[in-house]
Length: 416
Image (tube, rainbow, N blue to C red; front, side):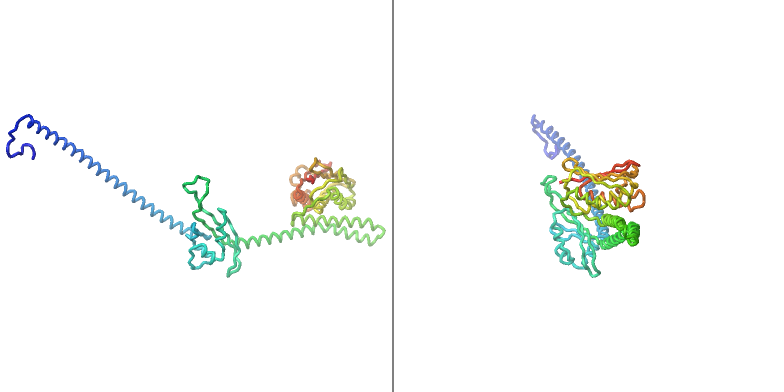
């Protein structure tokens, strides 16, 4: 009961009885204060709960929107993959097919067949995907020729392995594969176009060869026909006309060799040979051409024991081209000197020097380009063939020239 609510009055009015009302009053005061604090805390708690409920509702709404956006993106990506002009195949680590788009099914001619694993796919498509997947490369490309009901077709297959490092491993350590993505493309049209381009290139090369041969062979043939007629008319001068015939035949031989070297360039077989003997044979081979032009041709050698790894036919073609080039630009009565000497202990130097008209500095950079001719009277193959043959022999070719004084071509070979 509250103070002052007693039925009977309190008779004990001693000191203890006087303290009791004050204690009760203090207790009630503390109780009221605690109740106020409790009410305030409860109101704060209600506000916090309301705030958390609002935040939770907002986050739930954002999560719902995010899930919806992910669904839209997933649907859009799936639509993009389904409409791609190439096949897409995704496998997990257990070689189970995660996804294959319609173009992939068409390229592999799967039809409506249910394909769950890579083994099923290999069995139906007749392509050994398992062996391709077993390769250790993280990225590989293959081109396969397949037989179908419509004939042969080419399929390009690219495989990209996606992988990540386990959390317990440091960066740069072993990586665990997650999935592999395969891209399939029909490249039949590309292959057919490539074959057509190759056929067109072959036809153009054949036409170019025919044009060059027709241009280069016409004049020597006419000269040879003239000399043959002179032999028939004047048997007493046979040796002179035969020498001219030999020169014409060797010019034709050089022209044919140049054309074949440029258009059918195969690497010659190299064997150890005596450079001096080979070059001297080449000089003697071309000597009738120099005599016909009235140009002096001499050969000088400082050492007859220079051995290189080379091809005799190729070396003879080099010296033939250089001397014929010198003859064309050296007037009657001029000189051509072919000299050979050792260069250090592991190199040999061949020099072809003429007293011709020289080469302008503006033409030097194009001198060894196939098809370049300063005069326009030749197909411009000789020096290009020389450069190619020198590279095949592991050597170098250089030229120095002074206008109206002559030119010197230097051939540097590694020796054995």
